[in-house]
Amino acid sequence: MHRVYCVLLLALGLIGLTASCAYHYYAGNLRPMDEAVQGEGKRITDDGSVIFTAGRLEIQLRPMNDEELNRQFSVATEQGTNPYTYGRTKVFRTNRTPSRFTVFRLSVKNYAYPKVHIDPTSLYIETDNGRKYFALSFAQLKIYYRSFSLGGSGGGAASSGDRSRGMRRGGEYHIWQERQSILRRTLFADEMIFSGQEREGYIVFKTLAPDVAKLTVHIPNIAVRFDFRDQPIETLDVTTRFERDIGREYPDGRIELARK
Image (cartoon, rainbow, N blue to C red):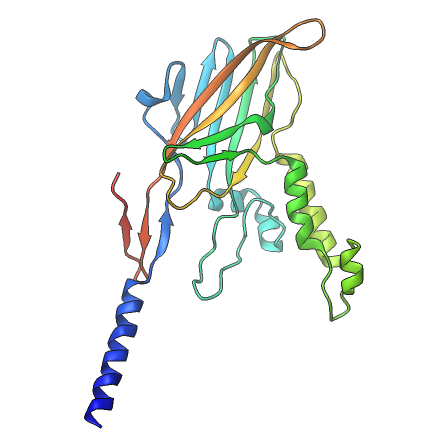
């Protein structure tokens, strides 16, 4: 009996030790690194944007966190149609809401050139630990969300045969359409920005790995002058630097940040 009691105590101790050691990866919101590392012609604003200025051309990049995106699309968030976040959905057991994407707001003010062009899919992220992320296009996001709109089986849903042919249930099709509508309106448009115009929209990347603390966002081949065939003859490359805190978050709410 004594032996059984000891074994039970040992098992309970191991369970307690395991529980005390459990943690989730923690990642804070992205913020600009100091102006000293941003490079010439750049400044940082109070809202966390990095602004590049060349004459009267202004290019602004700002990281968007999930709380801001949920507020920006509050109705869609409550209805479960926000295409940029998981809304109010929480993961089973952890009771946490993960990030769906890494999102930046790109703003351009052109008062310097007859026209300017930025291809939103040309943007990419390079992390200080060697990772690379490329901007997602509307077509890629459409395919991503299309997979969620395929009908299932049971309860009046489409049959497995219907699903294989791409048929959708009414509610899921509505959600798919709503997400597409928001993306069309709010992604940065692949269009010319003529003199005196301003343009704003979102750039979307896959979620950053939990070990990413510092990164560079590249905006390459910004066309500012064109020949008679509308082919670029002068381009600019802009880079912006961001960082975030990373570490471990324990069940008791304690956060242990990684060493920089």
